[in-house]
Length: 440
Image (cartoon, rainbow, N blue to C red; front, side):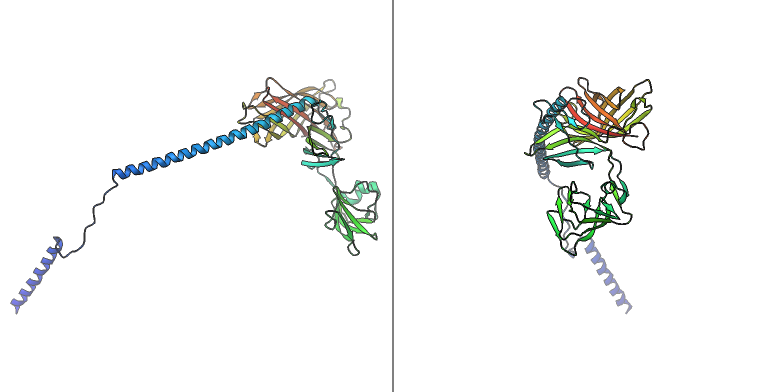
């Protein structure tokens, strides 16, 4: 038995060795196919890819060149338009300066007297107190619009019964204000959602009492007539006799400051639809300039404020392209009122220009010293500086007036304002403007 056992073990071992040998030497027992060897792109394929890339790059460059040419053409067209606009504005400003002359202060009369002027001898009527920015007023048959800045003080709030219109008219009795048929004009201070926004409104019984405001004071409107109406007009609500306003207890009204300056440029629209563009103007709406014994004033003062006006540049020497339009700027004046034996003097500058084309930080207009400051009036030459370069061949002029309309101020004038023009070289730049400033 032992002999057969050893024989079986030997046979099993032999078969195992044979199987291993067959697997290791690639015998027919395995049916797997080895993977093919990796190969890169051929030179022909590489050349084709490079050609496609070069073609795409060339096409992109061609497209960019076309786009640049189109943009350049648009820029040329725009530049020509800007050139035409700037030249037209330039010529208009030169005409305006020539026919207006200096000084052009006061705001009452702006002398366009030349036969070729756009509007002969225009007188600016009282336009009312501006709100700042652009405003419009219709005076008679003419509509005026102006871009203005003003130095008005904040409006005061006073008790309704202490207001000037309540005291002066005598219509505020026993806590009730009565409207009358002989009111000189509709009152823009009448406001209520129950009043008409157009035409005439009738109020039946039961609808003749409602809330509203009168010059900013809250209260109750009521009507005691048999027939009650309210009429909308362009200047406000017109109420006939029989309407009353009862303010709330302690109600206060807004009383605008009667002394203020306005300044800017104006545009007049005539009945036939034509427009007259007039010069810039400056005016202080007060009874006189408030200056007394001016020659005895002593001390120094600095005035800071704003300027506004029109300009044109159509030479490429100092601008990438010709331009024209309106500007706002800062105004600074320094005054020395002298002493009992020496006349006063004043000088200043305009800077911080902002135009439709952007900020002009390199612009400055110097106001040369006037060493004969008399009765608050002043004038002198202007010099326009661009990027540190002073205009050498031509100059402009400025003129203005001081005012002191505030009772709580000391003897030195509180306000100063005027108009100016400036030129940069011959045929390069023109500007006209107006300014107003208050004492620091």
